[in-house]
Length: 87
Image (cartoon, rainbow, N blue to C red; front, side):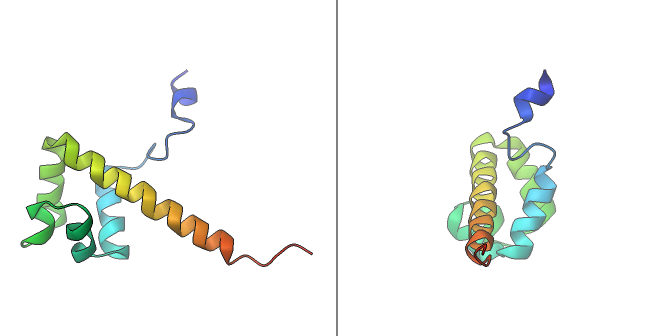
């Protein structure tokens, strides 16, 4: 039953650390600081300090997870748009 509940969850199987590492590698700290206005992204940012804060702050974690989903969907859309048409 649990598997069915997770079927449409885009975050299933992805840890918060994986999300942060992906966003930092693909978008950078400056982008994160602009999109999610929290000090741990703007002043002396690090993955470890960000994880500590995000694990204690549900609203910030929700924003980061939403941003991750948005970025992944935009990338998927861009990839679909670049596919050659089927002939």
